[in-house]
Image (cartoon, rainbow, N blue to C red; front, side, top):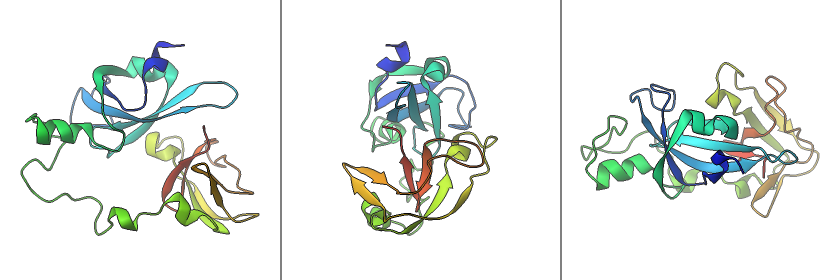
Length: 191
């Protein structure tokens, strides 16, 4: 087990690279491991790391994780934003939290959680809108290829995993083998 493999889902980290895309304001940004994927066959791990407000994300290979990030020594539930906890409940000031003055939360417009697409909404679809997600973490690698894909059979969900019969889980532009937006939902074929 590598040292990075001791970092689990929910871990809070500091981005030690300074002034990064995950937090262009801070030199030592608070980040959050939301998911950990293990590559089938190789066992390599890929960490889905978000900034502390869950605005920006990056996929980080286990070989780079502890080079670029330092464990903060605590964990936080993956659906919650650790920076908001510190600024709104603990009195910590941080310029990355733009809503500490009692104002209204912005950023999702009129869309509320009840309106968001889920995997179950995609099930039974015969065609889906697909977009490569590699450009979100590394814009220089992909332009965000996307198209409507007609499936061989209707999509289905089994054990919380989305299956798209006939869809090749590889971006034709950058070779990204796993992470896509399917009808607006972030989906990965990694286990």
